[in-house]
Image 1 (cartoon, rainbow over the protein chains, first blue to last red):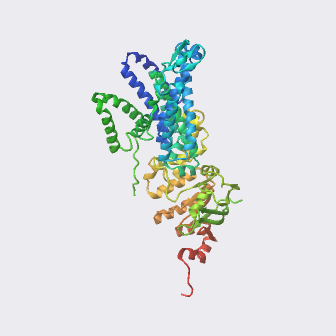
Image 2 (cartoon, rainbow over the protein chains, first blue to last red):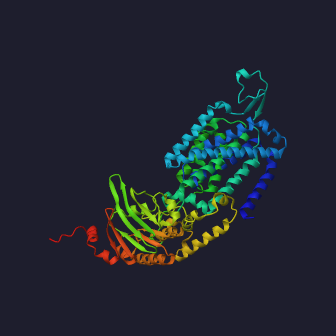
Length: 341
Length: 257
């Protein structure tokens, strides 16, 4: 077995062992640790699109929303079908969660194709605006979907004895007996960081391969890339779809940790937050983006002490960062042409 | 059969005719030069051949297959590769990685094998590595392989562009002003390099060049464009003294003056 897979398996084993420590961690810190993991997945998956392939997407929260709602809705509305598996204990729960994660990822990936293929004819600012619009459309649609709680948010589903299902009890159904299925808690330290490991493994292998050079070439110069036989459309779509897939998984992890999701969790600000992580870490730098995701998740929490000045300080730090290191924490500054003669 | 045949090709942008009913060909393992004053439509011809533009009229055949309906990357897959007038190297990549981009089209492993790093992928990567080493060796750039391509001196950047084009294993190489910005020593070196490429790789070359020394020195046959029309064609000695060519470059001759 090659080295990369051994490291991956060792990491998974270590995560599994570390997971037993989680009950001893203060719930506040535990929540932050989980959010750090989810943000690493989100920022790294956006890095595939924005960083490595150079397509400026501003709608990552949209893909995350699709994953979160898909997974939450399936896990509650179809809860009776999962009961058999769930009663099998830890293994059964793991199977259910993997099914939900795959559903969330695939749903987001399909959305990635739908938004990706038509909008990849656009470049730069135009693509950014289109993807931003797409994410807002997703959010507005969810906001008006009664079946997932609309703007009230989604906690779980009522299944009535007459077979009806709804996110809230309608007035005329108040007499009918029902069972409430809450969004199940699946996400823990192990699952979150398992997918952190998966996306890191994914990016390292892909970007070190010759195949992965295609993404970088498209970012640098599309015309030259095409002239060297690189199908730029194909590479852009692959980047969009795999980025969306992991955003969907992050959404599912979020839903099954928070147990309550609201359309406002996936608004424009969330998309911007992810973009900021990528830019701050350095476009196309794996380590940089991971570190930025960690810092930007912790920072607002550290600043809780100064209450109302929190967001101002946060914003100021970002401005200072961009002035002093515009290429990001670990981004490569392109050396200007120097003559060695 | 000729490697490249341009049949009655016309390219219009709005009311401007850039290429006007052009007929030209490049034979197998032949080195052909295309010259003409600025704005004569030379680079447009390259863009038509490589699928960047679709000609308004006419056809371009490569080994008998029309390249007109193909997209740029498909033309490259077919075996036509090029360099650019204004160097277009991938600026965030090293010299080696610039060359590796040319192997992307021949990767058999595909997306999932690359991600999971399984199957024959390591053999394939090793083969690409060896090919890269070999090409760098031939062009004497072995020691700069890990430098950023854009940080090299101008002449070496031109060479990297040529290597990158050759790495796609083309049957026809299009060179767009390879001598631009080179000093006389580099130009002499370039001339022997072009001849070497033609012999060693056994490919056909179509060359755009303004430097008459280079064109006359290496080309077996030359055709001249002016305002999108072919005004002359022949061996270098014939072109040198062709009245229409002299007129295009220097203006009309007035015998009565």
